[in-house]
Image 1 (cartoon, rainbow, N blue to C red):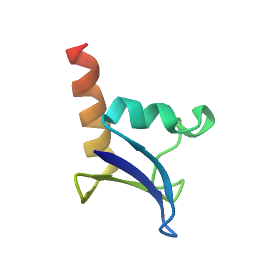
Image 2: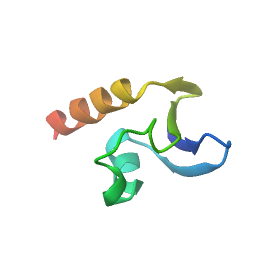
Image 3: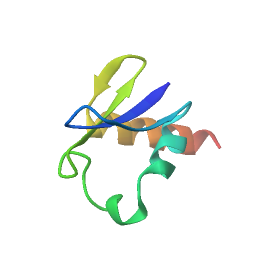
Length: 64
């Protein structure tokens, strides 16, 4: 399970996969880093880095 939060603690989205969560991020925002957007991703209850999130998205995309 992936969850997207803003730094104020508000949940912005949830998804079963990294790619599905990435699709919930507004297109204009995907060019900017999650950190600059004051957002972070939680995967299975643990906060992960933007680099780890990108790595997980790339791994899922390569499996398709």
